[in-house]
Length: 150
Image 1 (spheres, helix red, strand yellow):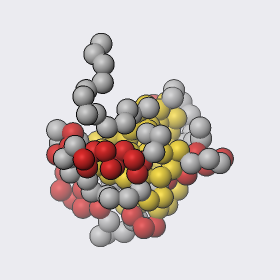
Image 2 (image 1 turned 45 degrees about the horizontal axis):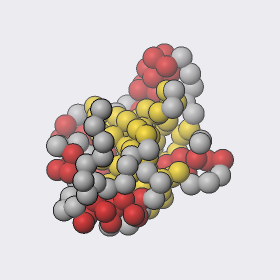
Image 3 (image 1 turned 90 degrees about the vertical axis):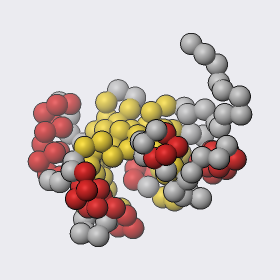
Image 4 (image 1 turned 90 degrees about the horizontal axis):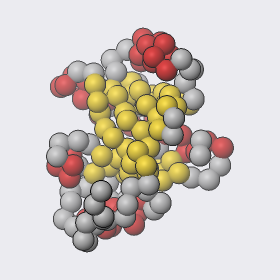
């Protein structure tokens, strides 16, 4: 294994979740209940993003199914353009704002300059796919309290 790169941003603490965009959320939930052998650990509508997120716990990580709640949401656009499948990979960080600032100082393109509330009691922010070889990247900071599932 190699050590951290020089000038690297804060270390990711874990893979928080892998998000999958789905056209039929209820069918996908049923499929993932069969695959994981469990019921969803968390379900939440994020009105500001026009998305419903359903989380399944898999060991220390989670799988997040994303369904659109309106025709003009980013998920609806993603599904129309690419169909269902991998939407983003989310990494845990200790401080989302500090991570954003340090990634920006490295010249990486960000979609969010500041964190915002996300699903499951987390502060979140997104980096442009160009920052990670075409993969949309989310930074997540667990918030204290029962919704964080920590």
